[in-house]
Length: 448
Image (cartoon, rainbow, N blue to C red; front, side):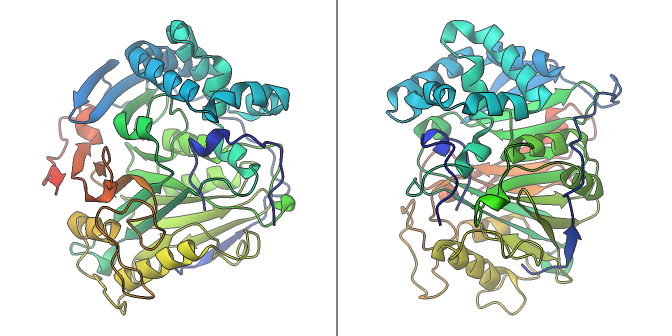
């Protein structure tokens, strides 16, 4: 069944991720009012701070931002002006992306994006453009790129595939009974992202410091971790029909940014999710390092289902719904690649799985899962250089792969060259980047 068509532009293939068994919580959001971001947070949040700056760490740019949304936008526009210039050049030279701004205006989509974006996204975009207007960036382009998950909901069928997957392991599943969170971000091949991986160390006025793992102008995160020990990432899903979408509410990736800024634990994250209006279908995984648990949140405009980490210390997800509250509301039939990758996670994670690593998980063994190239149905192993054949966890278009240790606030990230999962996973300590004196050393700092 085709999705509703507000857009026929292929604009935001640029930034969206599309197409475990736990306990399910029902959530009726039909009568919940929209909740605007909390503006009453104290100015002094009590966290260490680092002044705005940019550093090169191997292939990664690390950018520190601090203050109000406008101030952080202005800092990014100043520090990343050359990267922004190159990004705009990439868009201009792409026959599809170059049409996005005008087509969004012509079809009235820009007004929806501006009206439904969080105020802090609007202000941060204004700051970027004020600092980098000589590059050609516009406020409208910035808004479009940070509303991409909603736009993707309205694209015509036949667009290039995107797909993501995640897994969290804890308790008896791990060597040390701690929690680890693995994530692959699968999109189409985008050279600009591979060439410009950027880690933003965000220190919002009155909020929780956090990191986004992404690229320049990435104000709405697809992968993030905060200083309270929450790691989080999004996977896209497709709606079964138009009743599962809405023209009022919020972008889910923008919502994930709010969770990074305001949630101290998974209960607070859940309350934010339940307290918002939703526009599209999406999946979050949120892992709580301090409480050593994780949940998958499956969302449409009308329904929310939660799959909690089960008694084996496992929860995992690709791009289809499984919770009782949502399983009837995403696109049918489910793509074979989604089922295939989910079933391979089962073989690798579950205690009785065919190739199970259960009880042995640590960052290195979770990396082995993200690098897995085995088709669970045929046993065939894809060539190591394969980028996107849809036949295994590692070969569905990976642009980022990462493993979080949210309790210690450490993440290991692979990107830069294809095949991404085979690249070294480089370690970053959020505490160290924020200047904590008790920041743990990363051992190992690279997982080869």
